[in-house]
Image (cartoon, rainbow, N blue to C red; front, side, top):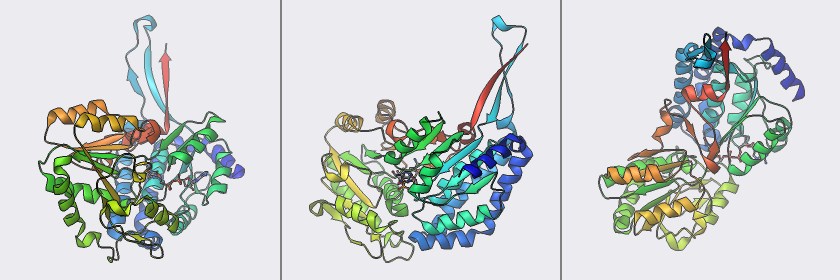
Length: 426
Ligand code: NAD
């Protein structure tokens, strides 16, 4: 690790990554490699947790292509000096802000969207002119191997290197000095990373998780809204950081919601016999999810198989905030439904808990929409939609409080991996 990081530091100090042409060339090279290896990438992720080529394209690779294309198009502008007004006391003079790369960056990825969550931050780091050590999650082992082979055979390790491994390798990396650490994963490990970074005052971005509520306030467009909620919850078998974790709705809508949701789940797309129904990442997580179930409250689904790691889309009804399922992020295909008598009560329950990564509001009322946006703190959200906010790179993606520190995507990613140097010139 020491030799690798020193070689990256030497490469960074050679100033080669400062060249915009160099950055663009590396980004285009990565794009070409991803495209050329699409089939291998698809096979690896299917072997790891049965994720289809369609899902891999729509929610991993296409997002990476879009990030690369936008960076290549806008990088000159992002990286340029920005002239600002000079204050009276300094006149005559000029003032400008100079974006500069931070240096050697460590990126630690999560397993649930292994390509997107590993290469997405790497694209931002490269666009900003840094060198990258990437440690993908070891759980989907084949995707980790494919990423390592693809990058390590084609990039100079002094510029971009994939280091495979689990806890010991990650700890060995964290013991070293980096200029930036970007971590995606659980709150518990986020705290370990933050502590390790403190030793050298290394800036960190932590993309973490939490329990993201979906709040329904009225019956308007309920069928369409249920369709969106069910898709967002059960895509990737619920293993999505910004998936709606649980539903909050007025008691009067409970039965209608349950009936519509069950009908939506009955579609072919969510059939567990379907070859493209995503598996739970490992047996340990199947057991963890099974342990969260309360059989008396299962409205539909509830079946699972430890051998095949298939877990049925499951809805739980009459759930209360005290139930086991409400004590941790579910991160799997179980959707608890909680009813409320009045919205203020529901809002105050959410406020008692950690700030969620996302919050979704399904409403026809402008007043209630604004009330929830104003009163609740969360990373990002959507009105009458779920999870799609992540696809708009004109908005920062990240958490707040326990759901994370910092953000990325588009120019926000560039900024996350940059320092902005203020210059006064007399
Ligand atoms: P995780 O925290 O278990 O693992 C993430 C990374 O940390 C992996 O690369 C792993 O090798 C490493 N790691 C694990 N234990 C470690 C330890 N003790 N010391 C050092 N390194 C260690 O998370 P996960 O299971 O891969 O992902 C699930 C979590 O990630 C969920 O909470 C989810 O909400 C969150 N997540 C967040 C985002 C986001 O963008 N905010 C995206 C995906 C997942």
